[in-house]
Every structure is written in structure tokens, then in C-alpha cells.
Length: 154
Ligand SMILES: Nc1ncnc2c1ncn2[C@@H]1O[C@H](COP(=O)(O)OP(=O)(O)OP(=O)(O)O)[C@@H](O)[C@H]1O
Ligand SMILES: [Mg+2]
Image 1 (cartoon, rainbow, N blue to C red):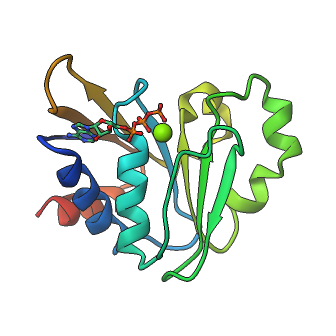
Image 2 (image 1 turned 30 degrees about the vertical axis):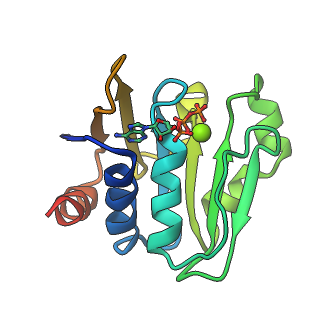
């Protein structure tokens, strides 16, 4: 199933993340796909804000994984852009995050599709040259996400 929307500004993308965050549960996993500058990190900043996490959220491109605590639940933020091998993700202990006590978001998750359970939500962001508009498509097979995404878009 898919639900499409678009945002016109970075603030709008953040606000959508913040609204979605209020419906998250521990163990939720979101795969963020989309090109450089599509708005993946901006969306995660919104999620963090929605969970009540204070402090700056930046792309963990070099760190690969960052943990944010102090909100409604821990937020685990992966950016696997620089990871080439599945083994590296396994060595990082990704399963402890994915199936742990927080919500997980993975920038460039499509590189390692095989690690995502069927219950995961995928968000594809598409950037258009010379405009701030972003096309956002939520893709999922777990029916729960339909209610969550619809509520977040309301
Ligand atoms: N509608 C929009 N939604 C989100 N970001 C937007 C939008 N319009 C413009 N932007 C700008 O696009 C950039 C998105 O950057 P961001 O770091 O979120 O992208 P990213 O997908 O995480 O990239 P990377 O793959 O490098 O990590 C920001 O500079 C932001 O201000
Ligand atoms: Mg990013």
C-alpha cells in the first residue's frame, strides 16, 4: 500500500515527521529513501522534535548510528550511505536497535532492504530541481501504518 503527499518547505517536512512521531511505538522501523538533499534528515529532525527530544539532530553519515534519548522513547538514527557491506551493519549490532525499546529510522535504508521486517514503514522522498517541493510516498504492508500516516496527514 502507498500513501502520497507533498511538502513545499523544509518546515512542512519537519512538521509531518513531528506529527507522525506522536503515533510511534517502540520497535517501529522506518526506512528513509531518497537522493542527497531529499529531506531525509529534515524528516528525522521532525520525528525527534515530535518525540520531545531536545538537542540537535544531524545526519550520522560518519558515525552511522546516533541514539537520542530523553524523549517519549529512544530514537535510533542510522545513515548507511557510507556502508557497503551488510556485514558492517551486522557488526554494528543493528538488530539490538531495530528490535529494541525505541523507534529506528534508517537513511538510505534501500541499500540494505533485506534487514527490514515486513512491518517496517518506508518513506521515499523525491526532490525536484530548482524548487523546494518534495514528493513523499509512504510504502507499507502492515495495515497499522495506514492509520498512522493518515492521522499524521490530517
Ligand atoms: N520541502 C522540503 N523538505 C525538506 N527539505 C527541504 C525542502 N525544501 C528544501 N529543503 C532543503 O533540502 C535540504 C534537505 O537536506 P537533508 O539533510 O534533510 O537531506 P537528506 O535527504 O538527509 O540528504 P543526505 O542524503 O545528504 O543525508 C535542506 O537543506 C532543506 O532545507
Ligand atoms: Mg541526511
